[in-house]
Image (cartoon, rainbow, N blue to C red):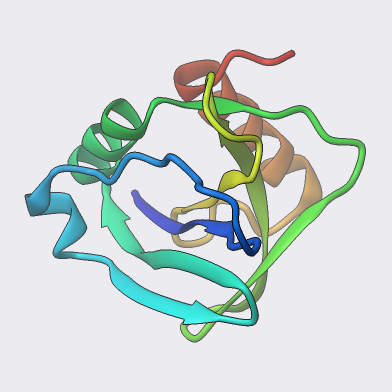
Length: 125
């Protein structure tokens, strides 16, 4: 299983955003960019690296009434699960799309996969 992730925050003038970067072995597998007032890391992680990433940055699931969609070079626009940093700045977010070839081809399959990821990595609120 692969995990497509976008992890970053908005940059507002005069505001200091505290965020935690993952360990070096995971961080070196991600690409950094700054654009339009945002700083982010993005990329594809394998299961072990994703487990380490989630542990390092202390992310929690954020319940949302709105669907999250991210754009990727590899897959185009894809649905994503929104996470936020536990007790840190509410500006720090991570959007995660688990990818297993052919597993989330229908909405019902995606819903089951999303529920499994939230059960393992999140605390739904």
